[in-house]
Length: 248
Image 1 (cartoon, rainbow, N blue to C red):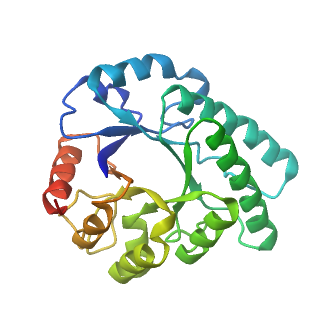
Image 2: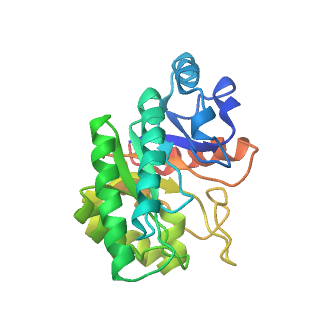
């Protein structure tokens, strides 16, 4: 197990205090880190200087699949450029959202087709594609469906603990790891407050992370703290809390 943090657009994180993390995860999208303007080779040098590994969040907008062939073909070109940047970063994992705009058979089929293509493209570059569970949102596939889609697409899963908790509570978190843990290659970790607010620092909400860390401790997985704050003291503290509860 490796413990790290997502950094979104905050690429300068790697030039500061990084001793608590094993890897970072930049977000390759138009809002946080535009693919075509990203100096991946230069950032890889900074990662090397800091002794850090890397995962990436591949573009999540527009959606990976729309069931419109021309749009989906364009999305493949876009994702292909993002995967090339991820390969330059020597990223171990590429995350993509498990979501579509419309939930019907044609859109599900289109998503599986796109995800299968993206998984193969990633493998060609030495990257594992991980489909992230987004079932707490209207456009996201439910937890069990994410597992089924990942198997059909020959992909892995980015198991977002906070998203799963919002979708089905603590029982959903633990049962997914029990039933589909063989698919999980990467995790996003954040707490969920009593009113349902998520992406909160570990220990400030109601998620029980001990079963998650017990599951992850002896596995070849990457665990990324994902908080929607720019003060990385919270990320560092969350990583330390997770290390403290992980079995040794």
